[in-house]
Image 1 (spheres, helix red, strand yellow):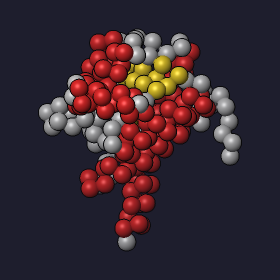
Image 2: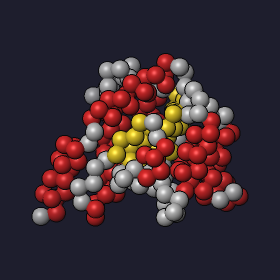
Image 3: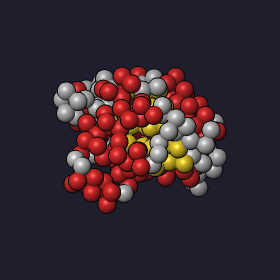
Image 4: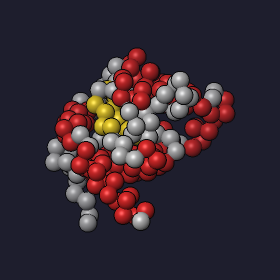
Length: 193
């Protein structure tokens, strides 16, 4: 039965995920807040929806100034139309004057891969972030891709079945960020329920 197999895999992912990296990420985000840095959350597809939700939680519950470029559909589509898909995040970060006090958090199934032309916009955004000295964080699937290669603190969601990498990676983005926003070193406002 598919449902039984799927939830068995969820348990396996939860048992295999690197808890120490998540704990480190909580402290990195606390340091970001303490230095008045901003958090730019990047993702495409289903991960883009996660970016919007996470921005709300980091701002409201943790007092971190956070933004998701995908929330500005007008700018996103204008940049895509006029400049191309590859530069939507790097262009947004330039205008935002992203700097060494800030950080980027990537939500992505594959983490970006230029050779395979997968999420080149994330790769270009991370290249700009590296140039400007931003910390790079991530919650990604597969092998972590470019995000894992250049990141400072990247949680890789374990692959337990190659045919279901996407649903598990995107679901665990939510699990990880909810763990973070409820972490005692980060949470400043209690959830209502």
